[in-house]
Image 1 (cartoon, helix red, strand yellow):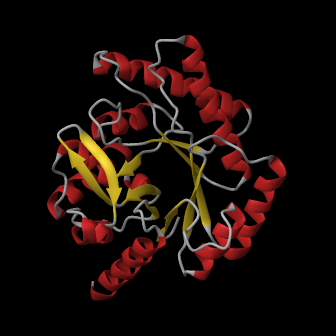
Image 2 (cartoon, helix red, strand yellow; image 1 turned 135 degrees about the vertical axis):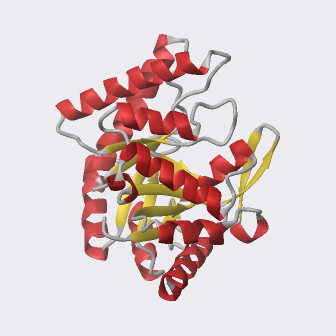
Length: 279
């Protein structure tokens, strides 16, 4: 990845149909560079369609990532639910790879009242099992555990970076809105640069050259995330974040999850490009 690309989490709202193929074409029309395919309610794409997706994205010069189903809990106490979570992630990774995506972002677990260190060990073990299976299939797609926006969910910055340090095949899914909602802070240029410094310190410069970022405004309360907001309706200091990304020369994908999707994605891209011209 030799640049920072901006795009949408899912098919842009202005797309003629709701199909992934038309979404990719619309992303190109909008002058954006990437799109996250949302398998969040289940993986419902077959092999033939996935191959069409690859061809279309390649022809249009659009980078793709995927998001695994939301129904994930690698700390499930019921073995059947645990296995079902692993299977959903495997399916998303397999179809994502067929689509030409290099990344599958995933939620990981809920604490369920268990000690965080115990949950960490379980999440690590079950992600390793998923990666081992994918590698046996010659599938080297990056699995990206996501920073989560609620205190009941596994996924602090430290937990995610530690996992990625210890497990080959993992890379961080950095959701700055979730981080802000979870902590009530992490919302200034200095804090954003501290986060990027921590990523570089633990994972090396290569991690900054291949980042996957979620970006939006967010409504939050004492328990964390409530809902996503359009950037200009939120308190997220997006200008400071874009400056931090510029100053650290971050490369990869920035996926906008604002309710207005492509409008904020284009705004972020234009603002970032203006910042890079200013220097």
